[in-house]
Amino acid sequence: MLSSDTLIRNASVLDGSGTAPELLDVALCDGRIYEIGSSLACSAATIVDAEGMALAPGFIDVHTHDDISVVRAPAMPAKLSQGVTTVIVGNCGISAAPVKLRGEPPDPMSLLGARDDFCYPTFASYVAAIRAARPAVNVGALVGHTALRNNHMDRLDRTATEAEIERMRAQLGEALDGGALGLSSGLAYLSANAATTEEVLALARPLASAGAVYATHMRSETEAILDAMSEAFEIGRLSHVPVIVSHLKCAGIDNWGRSGEVLQALETAQSTQQIGCDCYPYAAGSSTLDLRQVDERVRITITWSTPHQEIAGQSLAQIAAEWNVTQLEAARRLQPAGAIYHSISEDDMRRILAHPATMIGSDGLPNDPRPHPRLWGTFPRVLGRYSREERLFSLPEAVHKMTAMPAQRFGLADRGLIRKGYCADLVLFDPEKIIDTATFTHPISPAEGIAGVWVNGVLSYTAQGATGNRAGRFLARGKTTWVQ
Ligand code: ZN
Ligand code: CU
Image 1 (tube, rainbow, N blue to C red):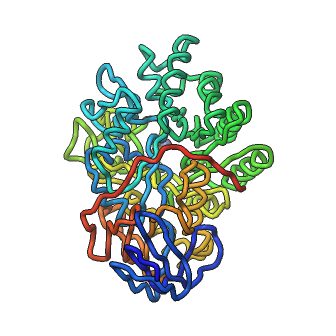
Image 2 (cartoon, protein in one colour; image 1 turned 180 degrees about the vertical axis):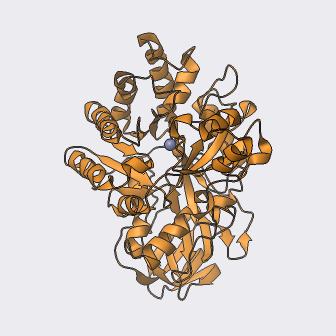
Image 3 (tube, protein in one colour; image 1 turned 135 degrees about the vertical axis):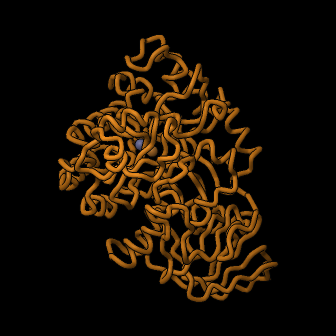
């Protein structure tokens, strides 16, 4: 008879591939999936009766800003409580490494942490810090274009010179050698907006031979979104690198209803190159407070403000009324600040979420005192609200978008599927009950319906809460595969 560490009996196994569930036993040993079958003859130190429960590969949050959190607050309750076992950090052009600041972190690097938190001048030093911190979830890391610009340029409101690009490339190359998953950009932000397509392309080129990806918070998500998509696809096409469009959305009331043409453009590009995207399941975005996004028709909530700390949670409209100024003027006085923008149409969001190219990424901001609810709610909301209740897609499809698809696209070897020999990142949940509880008014609230979360075979979360075990690892880049 086989012997294992943990045997999960009679689970409805959603293996991550998107196919229909099967009633199976899954045995774990030494951090890996040891055996899968019906009525396994297997002894185990721990036996879990999973009758009525669904067992899926641990969820992969492809879009996070947990760079510094995984080191400073390694318990990661916001992620573990949703069944997330891997986070990908370094999105939107901003990463904790490699970074050398000369002063305060530029916007939006300030979203990741304060000046002292940026203490990883090399990618290797960041990897060492993750290993030493032993976070509760696995970590894969992109390198931010804005972070590289910060390291090698005296000012960020211009494009980089040849010599600067050369130094950025060398530093990116070092990170890729150290296991980075790829490059991210945040071209919409003023700290990267002056970079030309050529600058980004020069940095994207070395990704091809490394088998790495290019993820982008595009130059525009509003009026000029189609131009921004063309730019992103051109960079991918000329460099022969897969492109992942970050938090794809049609932002701003004037752009509502454009998801059809946006997805059409994505599909057209998909016929000749590798393109994917991620999306969070909410009709509101969140970032630093950007004066360009202040629109009196859009409800904007302030999440933090350095000069007015007491104001977190209030709407910009209220604040402006109280101060007897325009919203734009109030936004100026609040700087630097963070905001939630209710500027996305629910219909567009649903159409993008349901598209087969779309992976799930929370874009959660762990340092916000009053974060957007996506930080705690994204994954159970996709499963409970959008799959079970709204039937936007089947449960196997929903699981596929958060497991195998991201593992294959980002090159996370042996993860994202329930297969013999794969790493034992698993989540056990009640498919009838799983739901998010985090709201815009009470954003810090764990999901309902998660029964167990194993990270590398170690039980890390149960219905009673975190077990205190932290078994996450740094995940170096493996081989990517694209099915689209
Ligand atoms: Zn972004
Ligand atoms: Cu982001």
